[in-house]
Image (cartoon, rainbow, N blue to C red; front, side, top):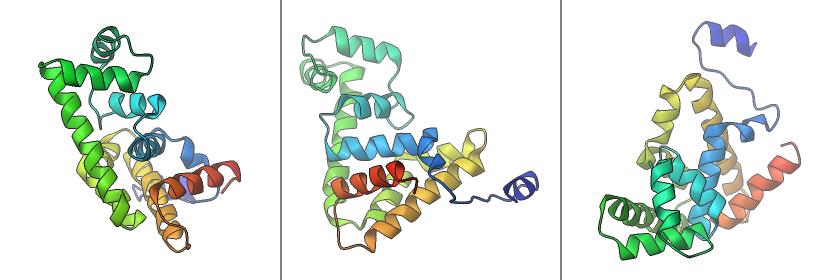
Length: 174
């Protein structure tokens, strides 16, 4: 029935499995959550930096990497931001400032509200809607929001626990 509604331009989704976890837009938001929880993880950091949320390109990554002897990319990026005074360093400092603000917000906001805050402040929800298949992409992000709502109903709290909750959903097929 999804195909019938989709052809008529009616956004619809069916939460029948965990395939939406493999969608680019969901992976990007989960990487952002992981980064907010722990900024020392290189893979989520690179995922978010290269996404529209971070807005960094391959040339930026090369500049950061070649500008530091640090083994970890997060350390190379922090070193670059502290030791340079160019456009890239300013964008890195702004990026880390946003991450820091979201870390603080994650401590007091209910997970559903926090996730919506990320969607709106990053503009990623609207960006996903403007991509090809935008209605489906936004529906995938809404499913993640629904998962946050379900998580809130448990006695477990916190961003780290929500990430674990999502990981368990992925591994147990929903």
